[in-house]
Length: 243
Image (cartoon, rainbow, N blue to C red):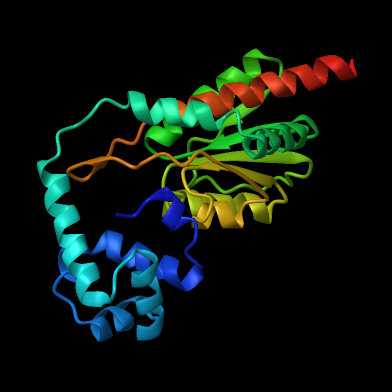
């Protein structure tokens, strides 16, 4: 129902509706339009525009489609991620995507130090990214404990923030702390319209279909690994040519 293409067209107010709906689906299907407007802090006309972007004539039709999508997801077995990965790899040949990678690699190559942050599975990949970059000559550090206060000035550094949803509050808090110490932020997220993407200096998004099993996000992380390794290789090539 919520395709990546449609989500990318949402403005800030529509993103508020989307986030509320995704967090309260079971409740939304029984709401009146005025109830949702109050809860999401938007107008009813904004909700109607939101519904039309989803090819719904009105809020009632939206609720029916949402209920059907929820029922279908409950009955859908976990599928192979092969087609998702294949679609992503095809998009990596897109000029816009390669341009973003090159721009990100250029920013990393100019930094004196590279930091990595992330929580959960993104934290695991952040640690992997730090090791991979360091293996190719770009000394990097994974900041595991976001509770630790940062007192040093981080001028001429860049922080690579990983988050599938781009909405993790721990990561957002960590980003604010790092930005306050003058570190540039490069985020790698699934959605370029997410909060983390918007507060970053640069963002690389991969747009694959999110998958959930019960309450767990099982979205494939292969695109993140590809982006990290490709960035590290591009940074290495830049340093080799400058020697």
